View 1: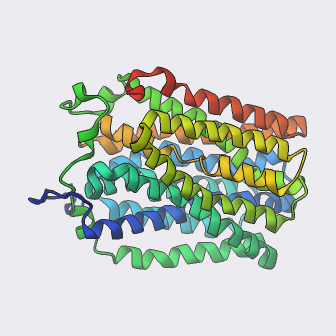
View 2: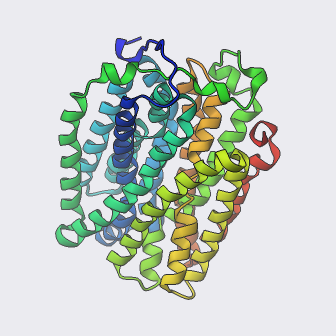
Length: 418
């Protein structure tokens, strides 16, 4: 194992995260913001690209779906790479792939070129910059406080929507979508230099005294040395996989078309993009609120509460297509926008607590495939339903059913109910 990925256990018991932990958290947040935020900017590129090439909605959304699929399928390999090579290699590779993919998209003249650049390359870059490596790195610094730290990292998705989505719309309005990709890709590649110069040995070596497994939800399994083959035989593995899978189908079948939906409902393009960008604010609030409820009412009740708000947000979206108003738009953003990823930190903590050990990166990365597969299926399914029906009603109904199915494991699976 590379030296930067090893660590030494401190002789001091940390009652709270060390001072350097907050700097590491800020780094993970920033990288996740760039990764997930750039992925979500595709929602404002969808209509300009469709207008340039005259492609059907489902064809364009296939680019977004391929990015989600690449991100999900590569997650276990990212976890394994982190286990053996450390964060410097993982994060550097992620930023390189992200910047190269976005830059190459500016030269695309056919669908397969955009699928390769904005789909495959960007998806791999997002996997290297987001939740799997962040959870493994922050687990070394925060120990039992990992759920709160991961709530901050997951909220980077919302912060990315808040900042990069409106910024992308402004760039498109002034320079067109190709020049916008040139500018965004070049910016990402320039950031690679300071990233590689960071003190990665120090960043990778710290370790909190109380590891996350101290709060495991399965005390009888506390001494098991988990491997991937052993984990896949455990019912909690597939319960978490299914939760990620069906919830992602529901969320991404809507999320990929939100800006287009608002524009077709009568909102100006910049206002639609800015409104969806504001979901980044409420997402941060939602993340921290659900994590706070975890300690107040318990993990299961907090997660079920978030699912209830997501369901209510989908209902607001359906009403918005019939009665466009700022009130309904606000209700949708507050309920749906604040909870689209709010369950992630708690599910991440549950997975790491149960499947602790040296192979936790590989195991959690494999569970995360469910999210990637769900997003890859949900986004094009939503596009196909829209193309088939020329309406968003089947898309919304499809999303609602899958969100409700994603909630079921927390009602029925013992390891997730405790």
